[in-house]
Length: 283
Image (cartoon, one colour):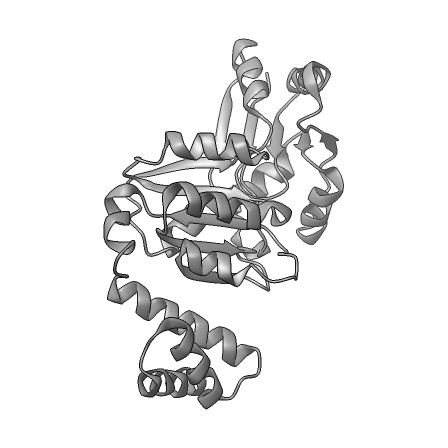
């Protein structure tokens, strides 16, 4: 009797995969992948020759039956395109069917965009509410947000680039101008963090250029939002200043120019921004 292993794979940086995950991927009889072509790149990098089969959101009962047949012959490793399987990915129905058929299910922990974004956001992480991808239509999205508008815990959301602007607009309209952190392309070469209020995030992505990449959004709960709607916490403002200066310096701005821009955008003393820019430029 085989075992269904739920194997977490890197979000971007391939060094994030665990030794246990590599062993399971090598020893499994077959790997059930959301996109076999994407997974094959990972397997080739680590010289893993295990056969792959396709299992995605459109596989339905036929896909489940295929996986169960494979389990009758040996172990199956389930992977998503990136991160931990089942989190906003297909798999829950397969796991229920696997357990009902009497096969063991074993998780192999590893990377998760939810946790990665949350722990570096600067917001309380002891309790949080994960909402996954919000509804695509604005009316449905606002209805859902209204229902959790009094949630005291930190909120974590996934969003596609082509819906990011509309999502930020609805978040601001329903939840108010709360503290927020937007993580883009986590662990990848172009990883980017934007911290501030929802209005700051909306302004940054309000231009003509379409947002690109994968986004994870962390938003203050109501217990944290009351202060941020009137006065931003000093420590969060300091983090935002450093992030913005790093972004400007990386884009080629001179230290003085970067200080002027950051001071104007954040309403901070120009002299302090210049001191901080010099410090970042040296480091």
